[in-house]
Length: 299
Image 1 (cartoon, one colour):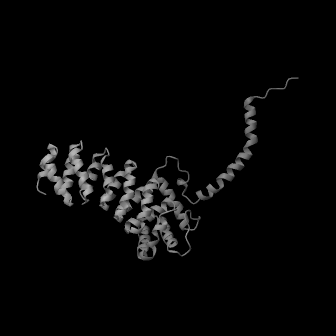
Image 2: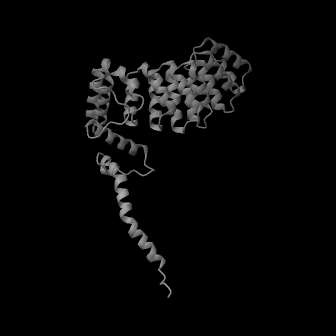
Image 3: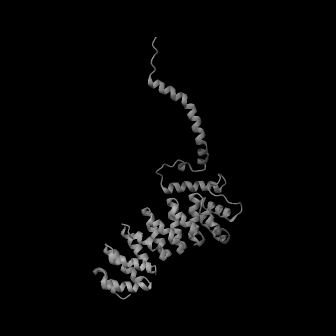
């Protein structure tokens, strides 16, 4: 007697019905922790798509930090002894992150400012092994208060942090204005950073104004954006060092773009290094025709 054939669709349904309870049990176990954490985040932020913008991800990080500040969730990242300056500064930062309006944020910053002598020496410790939301607030404090003791940590974040962290670290290094901060910025410039990071790099290197930053500015001058190129050439005019004069001389003599050559001569005329006057005389004698007249004008 032949066995009746089982329809393939019926067989598939039977397999699904048999496996479903086990699948549900596994799924419930895997997602339980995620759902518990998600309750701490506003509903519209709980399931960000992979294409979520940086602003959306930042908002979610801010919501999680607010939960930490309220004691609703354990803090991720590096822990510090209770009542230590690092722990107190971390608490102050998380209270600021929890603010929902400018008045609250300003008041939180005022409390940090009032206790700056006790709290801010702890900043270097908070610039590592912390969530991005905390890192960014700590970076902003380092820039706002021009903390030179944070330059090494800021340099590491500018090189190896996430995209929003890198941008903030580049800005802060420019605000601190320590020549040691130019070295990591040059490394970032030489690494072919994303277009959005190049103008902040140029501004930061200009604010530092150190000879160590000339190589980075020279790299950025190779960018296709004429506005960025002009700004970086102009920045070389602020650096009273032989390295900057040499770079400007090469640009004035050899660059293929007439506007860039003219900007280089203008920057040389503004540069206060002793070598700048010699370079201008040389350009007035033997430079390209379009720069001779400009180079020969009295400074």
